[in-house]
Structure formats: structure tokens, C-alpha cells
Image 1 (cartoon, rainbow, N blue to C red):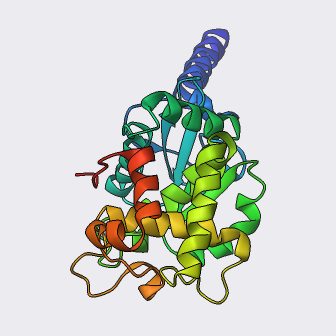
Image 2: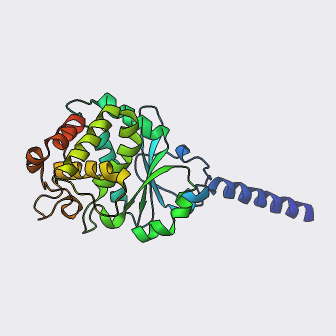
Length: 265
């Protein structure tokens, strides 16, 4: 009887152990092992290292080389904001330009994926600054964005600007060298003509980056009807019609690369 009881206890223990093992979430060391169409929940239980420790959400874009451009979000970033960011990436990657085609956009996306590029989407700037040290250990080339400046935040939507920054720095500039030269020249001309005045604490190396974002924001009509323009008036035109007249070189850059691009709906 005692032996029988021991065998039953051991059998129950084995069954419970197997059940616990089956229910235990797999811990991924490589984020690319996670897959799904929508927003994927992540944490330190299913993703190792600082990615799992800092972020709660994950979504991605797959480039034509089958590598990813990643978007990581914290808990205060809504799923809708995560999907909106991915839609903006896809809009930039899939809009035919007058001069640069979808093939060029694939080259841009591949460059970003090869350079291990990610958008890090935080609740706020303060939260990002509190986690800079952890973010710097991830091994990614990152651009930050905050939930307080994205879709439905009630403030200016900076999503187009920040996402264009990361595409420019790790996709466009390294691959479309002729375009980058034109952008730099247009930036210099706009400054000389008083159309674009970089703000005081902006490093010189970032002048063309912010100018490019101003071109895109203005072309998309993000400042139209606000009584203002990009950078608090640092870039003078407030819509693409004014831009075509006052800054035709900048206007043509957007047309050549992105054609008749419109806001994500």
C-alpha cells in the first residue's frame, strides 16, 4: 500500500511538472524569433535582456532582405499608436516617387534592417531619458518617439518627423548619395535665403535632418491651418503650395523621392 501511494504521488508530481513546463512561456534571446501581424506583448518573462525589461510591446516591418525594422513600445503607448507608427513606415517605404522608385525604397529599408534600426516608443520624454542607459546597450541604431506626441495625444503629431529622421539617417543618406547631396545643397540655400533658420541649440550636423523633416511635414499639410509652421516658424512655408513657390528645391526633393505622398488615414 505504501509503495502504491508513493508511485501515485510520483505520477502526480511528474504530471504537474510536465503541465508547468508546457505552460511556461518561452524566453526569447532573439527578438526576430517572435512573429505576428499585430502588436506583440513582450516583457522580461518572454524576451531576455533590456528589451524585455524596458518594453511592453513590439511590432515590426519586414524588409525585402527578410530582416526587420523594429518598433518597441512601453506600456503607456497604445496598440493603435504602435500600428500607426508601422503604417507611417510602410507609407514611406511604399510610396512611388517621381524619380526614385519602389526599388529604391526597398534598398532604403534593407539598409535600415542591415544596420539594426529601431524606433523606441516611450510614454514620455522623461521616461526615455530615465532609460537611455538601458537603451544604449541594445545594440540598435534608434530613434525615439513619445506617446505624448503621437496619434490622439492632443498635442502636435511628431510621428512623421521622428520616423523620417530614422529613415533618413540609416536608410536614405547611406544609399541615395545623390539625393543626400541635393538635400544638403537645398538646406544650405534655404538657410541663405532666410526660408529655413535652424534653432540655436541644433548641432550643424542635424541641420539637413531637421530641414528634411520640415519639408515633409509641410508637404503633408501638418501645419496648414495652425497659424504656425515647422519649428515654430523656423521653416517659413506652412503648406506645399507656399513651399513650391518659396522653396522649389525642397519641394522637388519630396516630389522626386515620395511623389504625391499623403498622410496615413
